[in-house]
Length: 68
Image (cartoon, rainbow, N blue to C red; front, side, top):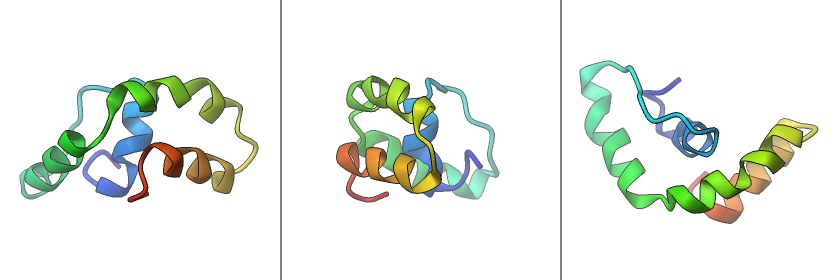
């Protein structure tokens, strides 16, 4: 999951900072992390944890990261 750039914003929003992945995924995920506003994502974490569905989580993440 950590190696999938699609989930990077979610993992950062939930406070994760250490990721384990296959080496060929490192550059893509590193670039993704560099493009995100981690503080904005962290502010969303309470709302994400209370979200009722996957689509609600995706909508919240899209506010902070249009690439979700």
